Image 1 (spheres, rainbow, N blue to C red):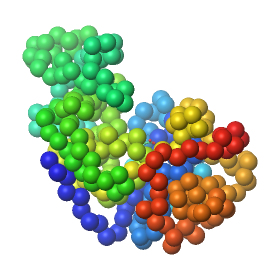
Image 2 (image 1 turned 45 degrees about the vertical axis):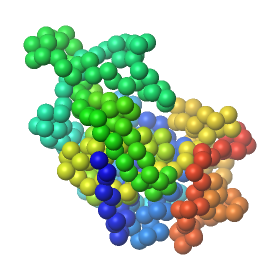
Image 3 (image 1 turned 180 degrees about the horizontal axis):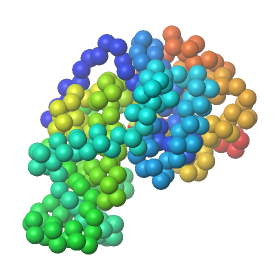
Length: 324
Ligand code: GLU
């Protein structure tokens, strides 16, 4: 299958942060590039809060995150914290919508309950992929109705969508042609967890499609999720957006920046620099948009923004910055 990506005239991009912590330099990098990609072409930005898992994503984090984006001058036109519709842009409030699209997949006989425990999934003999993910062996795909009923008495199942032997190809705006063999690189994947929470892959596809997002700019850690999202777009009858993946920021030892390590949270940067311009200057320099990391306002970058200057390789954040 070859996904047909539409040439869109007015970009609709999005910020899609998961508020399991505060924004760190890597999230800011992604937000800046998503903003520049849409705004430099007269487009719009939506803010969607990806708080699918309410336990991990308290509302206060989202509040801080929105204020931080605003402080940086990375404005959005629609979404959370805008007008009366704000709540509709929090994934935690959208379960009913995900349920409807889950049902559309189930109607195509592509969804089945999976009763495997974590231990079973992580068993030593389970095939591990190069990035550490485990390829699902399809254990529960062929259970009989009676077997499913028996298992359901003791365990709440997760739900998986079936993938067939199919190659999904797409052209990433930054990394070029990508091809994935779904069955070998993903296998049947989870669209609803056993605790009832809908999975990221389903939610993000449904949301981007329903919100009219036609340009997805995000970290290249999600490049490998793109083929299954394109697969879901097709099953649900949606047109995929353009995908533009960007390099990740890493510490000098190659470790990628992460919220849980508190890597350069915006709060720390704010206290150190006092104003947004020096932070934006560092981000724009790392993104290849400025020759030097000099203070700059976000709007000043709009006329000079050039996607071809964004590096392809991951970007090492200077040690001095990480030690703030
Ligand atoms: N919510 C995800 C994150 O914060 C991003 C998902 C996406 O861009 O598709 O990493």
